[in-house]
Amino acid sequence: MLLLSKNYMLYIPTKSILLYFLKGVFMINEKINCCKCVYYYITWDRSFPKGCKLYGFKSLNLPSILVKQSSGSSCGKFTPKGK
Image 1: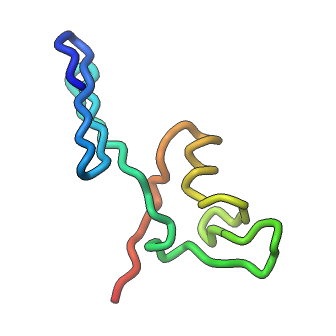
Image 2: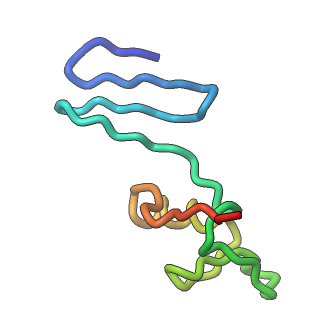
């Protein structure tokens, strides 16, 4: 989808990346896979099986979803695991 005006949105489905052009600034919003982050861990708590060591919380869903819901922006602290 591409809208030609001052504010337009371009959607690229193959990489699941949304590019927004707002007032001359590009912002990239990707889906974050917490399983590939160094701060992600699996808890022993059946009610809250997924956790984030950096933010210090446990959740039923992926921690990146909770961060997005509470702050309105994607997790900025994602650090990929090194192999």
